[in-house]
Image 1 (cartoon, rainbow, N blue to C red):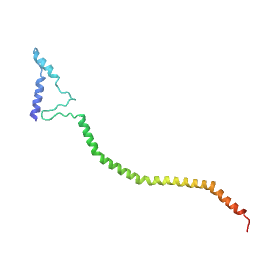
Image 2: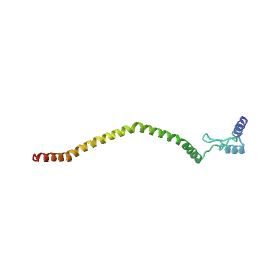
Image 3: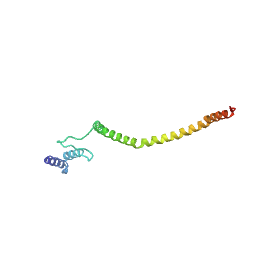
Image 4: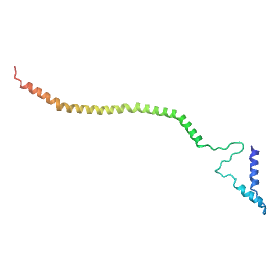
Length: 134
């Protein structure tokens, strides 16, 4: 492999060696070779290894696989967190709501009893008091 790298470097240096003045054919060949220099943003593959150029479909498939692999773990974490929250918070929330309902129910029963039951009881007592004694 090191011989391959050395051969490539040697070839590159030969292509870009200074051309003697007056050699028009060599100057034209040199200017054509300048365009094939790799730029730092390009991926240059050697003959031994294929070029890496993943397509969008490959990337999407990889992401989909990772997502599918991560979903069961995330679902389990969410299930545990939800169960823990329900165990801690739900009883307190239900008790507060029931306390509020109980207070509201007692207040409503007192109001209704004063408005309807109390007058009936007073009427019964007055009717009993107005009866002549036997």
